[in-house]
Image (cartoon, rainbow, N blue to C red; front, side):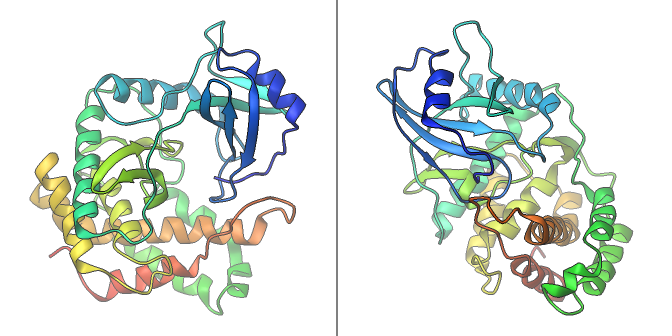
Amino acid sequence: MAVYTHVSAEALAGFLARYDVGELTSAKGIAEGVENSNYMVDTTGGRFFLTLYEKRVDEGDLPFFFALLDHLSTRGLPVPRTLRDRDGAAIQTLAGRPACLIEFLTGVSVSHPTPGQAHAVGAAMGRMHQGMASFDGVRSNQLGVWNWRPLLDRCGTGMDAIEPGLHARVDMALERVETGWPATLPVATIHADLFPDNVLMRGNEVTGLIDFYFACTEIRAYDLAVMHSAWAFDATGTRYDAEVGRALIDGYDEAFGLNARERAALSVLARGACIRFLLTRAWDWLNTPTDAVVTRKDPLAYLRRLDRYEAEDMFA
C-alpha cells in the first residue's frame, strides 16, 4: 500500500455519497507498500479501505480480481469483498484513477511470526488454493519468470548504485533459474504476494487474506515459495527461521497437499521469487516519485534471501 494520488476531503465525501455507508468522519493515507494509493476511511456507517489503482494495476484486470474475491468469499475464505454503489458498480473514478471501496477486515499483520502462526498461514494458503481450484478465471502472470529478464534490462546497471555489481549478480542468478524453471508443474490461480502484511491474524487465527492485485494463473507451488521467502526470513533477509519455514510447508501440506515434484522444485521457485521481488523493489527504488507518500522496500533484503537459497536447499 502507498499514496501516490492525493484525494481531498471534498472529493472523498462526494465519492462516498454514491454508497450506503454513511458520511465521512476521517481518512488516513497508508504509506506501506509500493503498488496503489490506499486510504483507511471511517464513516458514520463503519470503516473501509479506499484503493486508487496506479500504474502497475491494469483497470481491465479489476473484474478478474473482484470475481476471484467473490468466489473465495462464497467458499468461506476470509477475504475482503469490494463494495458496490447504489447502481451496482464496483469500479469508480476518483482523482483521475480507477477506485474501489473495499470491506475492512479485523486483525493485525505480524512482523515476527511464530511457528504456530506460520503453520496457520500455510494452512490458510492451502484452503485458499482449494477454493481457487474451482475458479475458472484466467490472468497471465505479468511478473512471471519470462518477464524478469526484460525488467532486469530496464533496471540496467543503474542497479549498481544500490549495490556495486548487483546487476551482474542478478543476471547470473536469473540464468540459473531460467535453466531450471519447472514449467510442467500444476498450474492454477494463485495469490502471488502473500507477505505478512497481506495476512491479518488474531493470535494463531488467520482473519484476513488481502491484496489480491498480483493474483494470476501460475505454477501453484510458486505461491508457496513466495510465501516461504517472505515469512521465513526477517525483514532484512538476514536471519532465517527454519522452524517457521518448516511450519509453513507443513501447514500447507496438511491443508492442501504437496506432491514430490512440487516439493523438489521449491528451491528453484524460491530463488525465482527472490529475483522477482528484488527486481521490482530495485525498479521502485530507482523510479519512485520523490513526492509519493510511500515506504520504499530494500532490494538487498531479497538479495540476501537469494544468496541463502543458493547456498542450501531448505526444502530437502
